[in-house]
Length: 227
Ligand SMILES: CC(C)(COP(=O)(O)OP(=O)(O)OC[C@H]1O[C@@H](n2cnc3c(N)ncnc32)[C@H](O)[C@@H]1OP(=O)(O)O)[C@@H](O)C(=O)NCCC(=O)NCCS
Image (cartoon, rainbow, N blue to C red; front, side, top):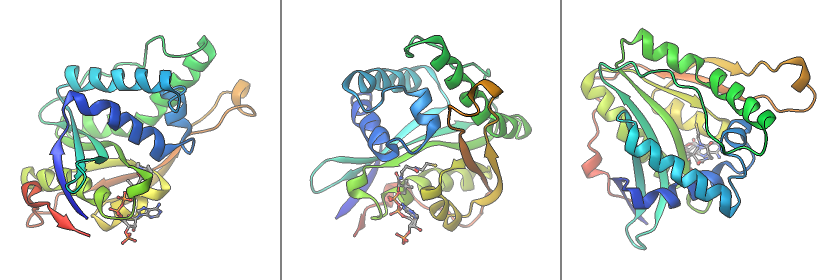
């Protein structure tokens, strides 16, 4: 199986969201809350349009994909946020994607708390940072190196620029990030107000930071690998 890494086009966003939805399933409260009903047809249509909106309107966002060259199928996606002398405005999560105000408030709470270490890191870097925001591989294609290709796509550029990379790691992602030079810098868990303590799930991740590694440069254009 040979894979190649390419930048995503707008037409790839439906497949990108399908991969995100299938790879996370219901494992992450953060994804379930911020992309409500993501496994449904309606939820996927909204998720796709939100990704397109990010792609078009956030100049710091780059969507990258892995394609199986034998079938032409997109099998993985990553959203890298690349900040170069840019500290973005800290916007809240908003919209009319939720069935009621309570669901929206819960999503906003998780979103604000999820972004605390990332926003701090962006500020402390003076707006010079690589943040791996979303990384997912189609479950049918996992453990074949696609995730690693998308991590290296960003880290190799960060190394050339001498910039740090950060990621909010899930359990499945941890070993991959660790082996690519990210370090465990603490576990983050959402604080829930009393009204939700019994009824709602907390979000949790390992905050990981990778220092630039001069000499570890890797060319995305040469990423064709056989498995
Ligand atoms: C995490 C994920 C992106 C890894 O992508 P992948 O293409 O399967 O990973 P790779 O084949 O490049 O694997 C690299 C290494 O990561 C680790 N790894 C990958 N999947 C893992 C899993 N499910 N559990 C534990 N470790 C895992 C292993 O160390 C693996 O190396 P090995 O196969 O030689 O043991 C993918 O499993 C996924 O989409 N998971 C669900 C969504 C998710 O948690 N994304 C990370 C968000 S931070």
